[in-house]
Image (tube, rainbow, N blue to C red):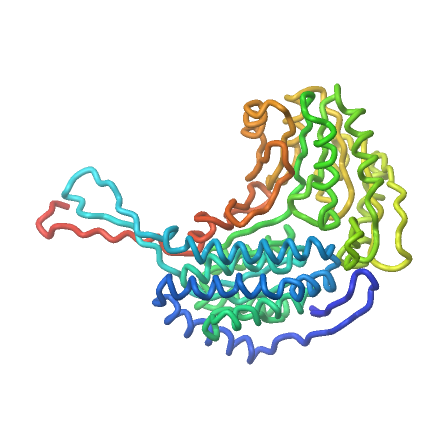
Length: 463
């Protein structure tokens, strides 16, 4: 596994990083465990200082962190800056709320003979975080901010194409005052990752990534009888009902599909539009996509970034070709495209029949699957005809109706009149092949703690 920075805008290799040695793996595990033994006894107030310091440093040096992300994976510089702020907000959220979220809970009991029972929440130990390239800082913060706040220590294995972003997070936590060994970025091989998972001091694994990577890591964690959380792929439905505000809905659709060049697990990948407004919506959507501008992601005027790598662009092209061979129709939006870089013109796919494999695939880039639904019930049926269950959205002027529809969609998140969003104080996670577990807020911080029962019972109480 080669860890290297390759600029997606120029396809130029900037820097290569050597794999971590076995000796470094051993030293990291030793340090993480030793630090855990003291960090778990550190007060919430002291941990909160470190989290707040991390937030403050990110905001102070936002431009530095943003430029590293844009250089490595091609994200628009404006989106990179927004990600730095989101990352800071997550650290700040746990600085302010971790102690409250992990307060012991008194349990109501049926009789005094059961004693005075309470739940206390205690950290487990070392966690391994395996994170993806599409949000190089936010994804890391989503696991380390809550888990460091809870008293755990974390080892990071980041995506191979964002090694500088990974190291930047390591440096950030050192500067923020986290004790040595509390968090460490490594550049391990696949075999070394398996060894880390199997180490008895590692108590849990959190992965965000592809189904394939998730299945492999989850099976390793399962074999070792360790807790895991998996945030995997998605193919979010974007349902447009007949009473939606089409002008605003179409604008959200263009944004929801093309932010981060469409490389988001919660992108609005499947547009499902009821028949009576289908033609008007498609007209507005096509016009909106045609206004996007490809170019240098460092240029503020660029609105559609390159994909993360040339391989990603090539793979997406092959996926579209396979969809067409299976009967779908592809319309390429003829945007002006730079001569170099991992660019991909937006494509709208229609007529993906029930037997077309593309209907149930995730297109990680600016490819839209478009469906005409007969009515609301048909729209819900199409939305649920997917192996994924991450996010989704429903557009309607009737908010109560939108909520009723949302309850019928088999996903972990549904938004009314907005594409699926990511915020520091909202939970994130899915069902089905989109994974299991939740990140952020109280749900996230409790994924890797021991909810321990302590019951003080009168010695003379009956059994």
